[in-house]
Image 1 (cartoon, rainbow, N blue to C red):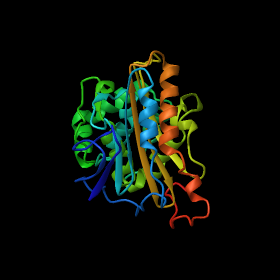
Image 2: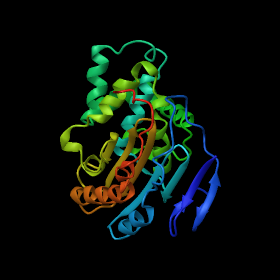
Image 3: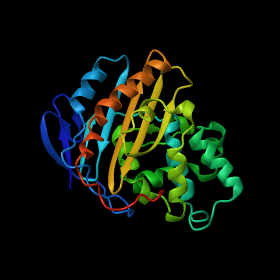
Image 4: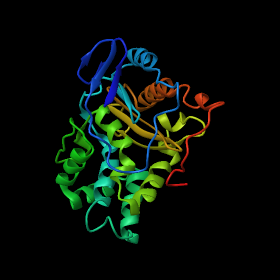
Length: 281
């Protein structure tokens, strides 16, 4: 059972209000054994929501651990932009003709730039190969409820809640043979695209993320991330639309992530780290 924590004024699965409400959630696919987030840590959702309210445009977010989730307008649909490329990668690697064999050099040259450099032509080629049906099946397997494809891949509809659920389950959704490779690409986004959460990684944690933005206009600027330390996992999705400029949207993302992740590293002081090594180590 997933406990959904709702701070005053935040929208969570099932309604609006203060307090705690239970909600059913699709179990994560089989993958590494995961533990709850560090004892005593909770995201500063009220501060993040208050900051978001001061920003131009619309902001929604979702924070998820193996046992809990916190959301602001988590079920609000937005155009995916390049965030969906993480789903394109996963769906491609799960193909029966791909999942149990090494990637070819041609495939690596197609998939790596799609993630690390957010190459749009590569994304179009991948989507044309796998079709929207593969994305829709992946969404069902990940327990998504608000995902919808579009003839133009960047216009697929996503929600913060679905994306945090997808990234938390990512290791289990990826085929074991390709898991470390896919995570390595998500960990090595090129420096020019490492704004927002890329500058807010808590000390000691590994960061895997993908962003999506609207050609530098600020119309869309999203980021979805998985944070990992030993067996601890925290996923965060922040979606923004209607920023006056791309740079303004970047600042909104960084401000929200900063408040949501505040204290995640400092909670480790004096605490034993969880057992287990991450698969990319």
